[in-house]
Image 1 (cartoon, rainbow, N blue to C red):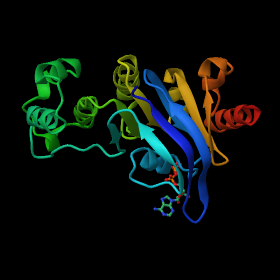
Image 2 (image 1 turned 90 degrees about the vertical axis):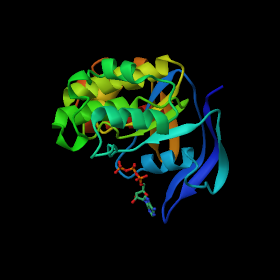
Image 3 (image 1 turned 180 degrees about the vertical axis):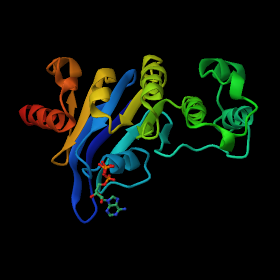
Image 4 (image 1 turned 45 degrees about the vertical axis):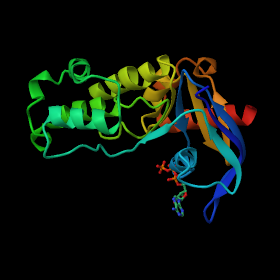
Length: 226
Ligand SMILES: Nc1ncnc2c1ncn2[C@@H]1O[C@H](COP(=O)(O)OP(=O)(O)OP(=O)(O)O)[C@@H](O)[C@H]1O
């Protein structure tokens, strides 16, 4: 199984971040990891990719784990087509250039050099690269930070939800909290050095319309009740 399992994980810097956490991320689900600023979301990702070693406990991964970071990465001096072909090769992807081109409407810009693309065109190239890997367990650390509202919708539905529907284990950090509530299969909330799993279907239906501080407050109360 392509699950990702934390057993008895504790970790801290000068201050504690996680305390004896047990949690299983299951395949086929899109998890959004939410927490207050500085609570340790990125640190948790670094533990999941085994970039950091926990003080106690262990992480078991049923497949390769790939982390997509906040900053879009591509080769500025290559054309869009060269970039896609290069990433297909680097990531040893089974996908074909023509499929990527069609899905992200890259036909008109395929021969343009990346550094000359408009903001929106760069976002399309970035989405295409982000979606390209075949890895089974996918972590997205604010990969939507530089995306405009329209491209974000495409990222949530055509990258994250589609990956989960294809049986991947998908965990995303996003500062667009109300939007993430609409797409999440599960919320994974980090508070008081513990991780809590919340099913969005069990939350008030108008929650996503509230302001983000209020949403965080309600989610914290949910966790206290678990
Ligand atoms: N290498 C490090 N050494 C010491 N402290 C660190 C290190 N990395 C992060 N921290 C601290 O650990 C805490 C958690 O950081 P982390 O980046 O994991 O939080 P986050 O929830 O992802 O934050 P944000 O929402 O602001 O992106 C913060 O107080 C941060 O300053």
